[in-house]
Image (tube, rainbow, N blue to C red; front, side, top):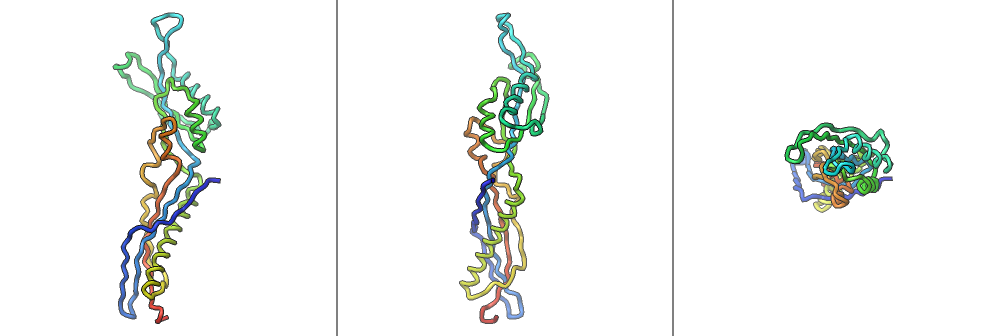
Length: 231
């Protein structure tokens, strides 16, 4: 099962305590936050391929073109050998432009997109793939198939942190929390920084920041409170 942990983090946030007449509502406003770290089980890698030339053994001085089909077959063999099902491999782009600085020939290019389920599987592919004809090897997306449950877990932790703060403040002032009267979620899409896309894989070092999905949840809650003596 995917391992995760949630840590409630209370940010330095402002607190507003409004005390009005006995007939008016008294409010405490607090913020709460939580950070959740999830191990990804869906990692999308994009592999760029391009035709290339090799020396012609039968005609010294000449070269032979290794076509895009041959390059693709080698990459597919590596992906399938690493346990990636064919249904999880797609063509994400095809085509190229002529770079006259490197060759006068037009070289066809292609990009495959494959979904793996863990870092070990990705490491295996990176070790085994033939570098010849490979122009790029990038992580385009990381995700977890049960992310909805983790999002609910993170949001609940942020709400719990807000309530804990409100109860502490109220108790310190000789008050009691009655009920929440307004809840605003401040999480901006949950994503944390650049953990998700366009991270190049370079033999292991490029994956250091990709081993966890880090998401942050923030809420602002207004609680109604009352004097203990009045209850």
